[in-house]
Length: 375
RNA sequence: UGGGGUGUAGCCAAGCGGUAAGGCAACAGACUUUGACUCUGUCAUCUCACUGGUUCGAUCCCAGUCACCCCAG
Image 1 (cartoon, chains in turn purple, red):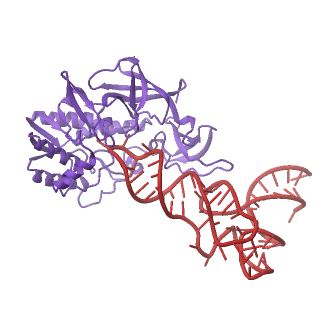
Image 2 (cartoon, rainbow, N blue to C red):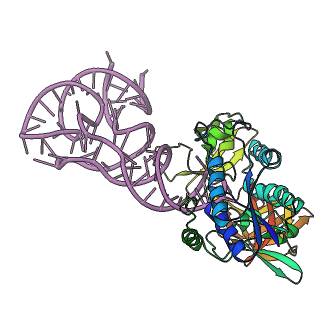
Image 3 (cartoon, rainbow, N blue to C red):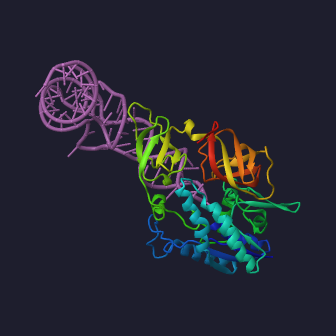
């Protein structure tokens, strides 16, 4: 069985490659480069734009050392155009529409589990493998995606838009071990280039950026008013509604108001047409909560859940699952009715449905309601 | 230019003679394959509008100046 593992230059995929080899697979590795800072005009907010070596090349070097140490061949491929067309242009479009996109979900859907998978098949590999914290299980001729053993690192949220065929073509060697064990294995193997490397954060393949500056490369900023949604009064100025997400506290710059208790302000609503950012005072404010939402771009990995079924939903990565009842509106729209009001459910983010540990798939949050009214 | 009130960090705001609470914001760090949330830490030391005075000692008392607010004209 020939497997092509995506080797990122981090510790997770390195250990994943090792485990596969140990399990007897014929393992090759492939390093993907999907972002070209210069070609993509990624200057503002890029902390490494002037470095001698861009961080991706450092990652590549680290991957080379891992492959060498493990004795596996390393390929390299570019999906810069695919990433731009299928992931980044979507991200820009969503921000322009005042929503909060989740690029990494699209990255998995279109790059890792599509472009990369096709590339692997075309080149004679039977399967691909990833360093994701996720698990698959094959039962009665079907493949299911499950949460990883390490519930703290579970990344099935990011995999919610792939299908059964894609899952069944991929191995997740880290599904049954936790992160500390991964690091321990890396140490035992003395994978010096990655074993103590800090976990990567930021948008996958792009990396850490000053978010405001980064977006300025692609979307013009337009200052506007910040309005207290409870009292309908202007209490500040924003740099552009696209920079903010529902539930956000940081970056509003609103101080105390005479005669009022200062509890912190949170983004409650974005009015893109009037360029107004609505905020609410206090983290328990009613305006931050909703009790129902509509999701579209439905994708169910294995089985389609039933109308009226009670499931758990995750509305943001690393947020706990919350009970919902589902109701089909049409083929591509699902209504999620919350058991109680939930905070900061945000259009553009993914709503991922779980039945226990099974990740069923989900959709993208389109509209959010509270007591029958659009939020 | 009658009367009253206020002036403390970017914004609110305690302190009212003994050597500057707290909140918000900001910044830093932790967490994190979506820079959200959350958590931790930092943040007035020739300083309490300014200038004098009283006092062993003043943000706190007194006088004057300036600024702003309110009421009355």
